[in-house]
Length: 305
Image (cartoon, rainbow, N blue to C red):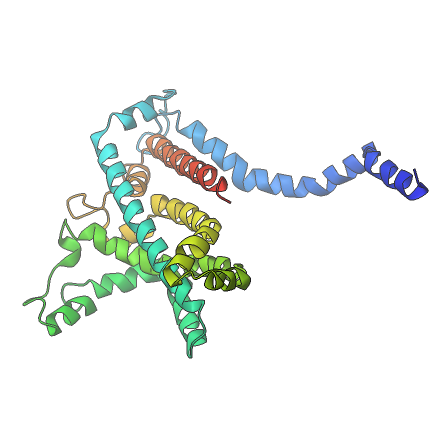
């Protein structure tokens, strides 16, 4: 064995000294303290609160009830109704976002005049804050002077202005539309980056073999987009399940509980009923469901990567 090989073996096999370990821990200590203070402690403390029947209407009497808050939530029909609405909202939103983002990414992946301008315009919804986005769509849907009502009236599709956000059947669709409009740009960027990573020689070889555009899309583009689809699905699913802003700004859970989703129920229990124990339990249930879905999505898509 050469001296160079022996030296490399000694370098790899040499254990880290106790001094180096202590130095590393010393440098990591400030970060760990900050992380514990701003992340770990609030998470653990909120779980501790969920084990108490804590209400701000009687702050000096908060009995320890173990998991009764969780049991009461699962026995509440309103909770299961809100789960159904959250599930419906998530499925509609994520499906629409992935479909529209894929089409936009395929378009922006081609060379044509005005592509850069279109890319810049696409980023506008993503750059708008959620509160501003909610207020904008509230004005658009307004029954008195809303742009959507005006457009439909001018096209002759309606004979009078409609109270759109007051319609039980249309409310969730309108909120979904607002959410999709905000989220599509980021999903498009993620899929576009994935498209750019596909080697051009794969398409050239497929053309030589006689594959048409549809066959190249099915056998080359779609499989290569799997990592991007997985990332978009995980992120947008988490955003949709936990989304609160649009429900608060547009409808406040109405009309007639038509948009009463789980995130809105967390707000109602915590800040309107002042039941902090129940609100913390609801938030933990929502977090566990979100991370469980993310885990299964990652596990199912990682086999194809």
